Length: 112
Image (cartoon, rainbow, N blue to C red; front, side, top):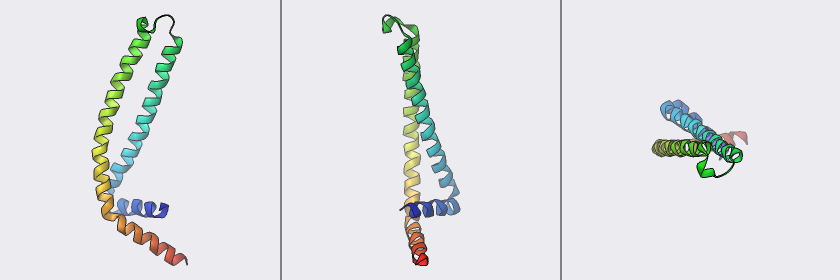
């Protein structure tokens, strides 16, 4: 299966570089989304940790929550957009899956 994935990757790189670029960009964006969410969580936890008294009266906590809400909405919107791209990548990859399967079978046949 790993060899099949590598074969599919190489076939897409050769036959459909546009789709391979979209796939690469999508993976990069997903990683960036995770990092942004982790940073938002850390800033919220820091604001909560540093707060004293009522949390609802602490401007830093309220501002952090507002920022967190806005960025979470932005990330959610971008994730929805990436799902459309992911569907296209999956559809196009499906066209080349059989070729990748045959490539991996040929490799194992030659290895014996």
